[in-house]
Length: 126
Image 1 (cartoon, rainbow, N blue to C red):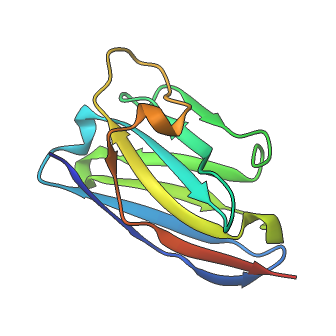
Image 2: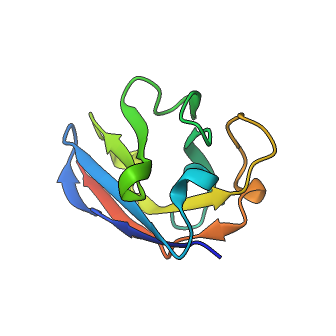
């Protein structure tokens, strides 16, 4: 099975930027559709962004469209989430997720992903 590990979380002020990365091991990242999911305290996990297995399609939660960008570097087995103009409501644990796909679509629901990283904390202060 693929193993995933997130990096790049931290604390920023409102309006700041962070880039999260997710490194895959044991299996090539190029075989998987990838996504980022977040969970804030007391809330359910929510979809943030996803990218298809071939990188041809991306999708975002409405709350982050225009501010977050997901990308993948299959040669280096890494997926990125660039987060700009951060707001306090972005405070959460961010996890990357992977799924062996049956199509070139983006997987948009957390339950569609079978493989998960341990998560990284992002805190945005006002």
